Amino acid sequence: MSGSFEVLKPGALTTVQDLGRPGFAHLGIPRSGAADRGSLRLANRLVGNDEAAAALECTLIGPSLRLSSEAVIAVTGAPTAVRVNGEEMAINAAINVPAGATVEIGTAERALRSYLAVAGGVEVAAVMGSRSTDLLSGLGPMQLKAGDVVELGSPTGAAPPIGAAPVAPPAQEPLLQVTRGPRADWFDDEALGRLTSTLWEVSNDSNRSGVRLIGEQLNRVRRDELLSEGMAHGAIQVPPSGQPIILLADHPTTGGYPVIAVVCSNDLDAAGQLRPGQRLRFALS
Image (tube, rainbow, N blue to C red; front, side):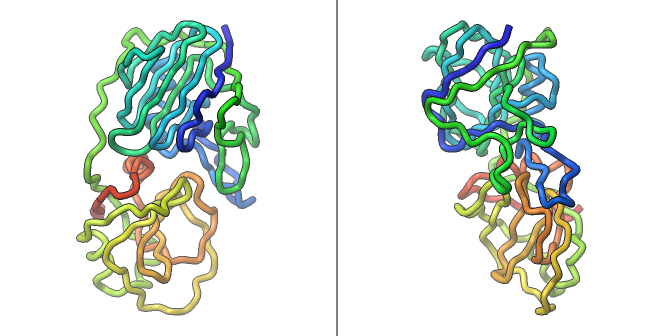
């Protein structure tokens, strides 16, 4: 059975995301997709979807939705209040929602992004093989706004017999493992040590393209211009200010700032959950 939901309140920034559109970097198109792919995958598994199905990524303050028909939903990622017709529900668990019910996702208590999956997936039009909203290039559907009606697909798989998942809460001060970057030699001998010894703070200027950090200045020894080169998800660029930027899902495919280090793949989801004002550390792997 398929259905739809109406957006009553859109939240701070709610977008449709799946696992992205890899393979188009040569055209200048980012992979995009969920900033925390592990949480997206878990939400989909809990409702019986393929892990790559499209769901909602809710940033800090979640939306309020009204479902047209009965459905199974799950909310994962940043801990937050989930209410169905005013009744509080558990996160990281399958929830049966009756037809016409209102689903409310609250404000993230820790971390930044929550994921709302619905059995059958979100059925917006795919662009270049993905339903993801790419805020950098403008591909995919627009962010949700009040009054939108979004179609849902028909469930294709049974929900797992265990309807809840044990998930550890996100760390208050994450420790992200990094490897030495391709342009580490553009910095002085103390820069890598400073990167890993500093307690960094996440700037308010952060977004899905990158997490801007505030802390010790990372000094360059080379002042010449670096030709634009390919950028990877998790690359830590250092602009002239000396304050690093961790590239996230919507990052530009090329860049001209030197990359001092790269976040290891196992910690990319944690990087995607960093919220303004939060503090973190790096460790050289």
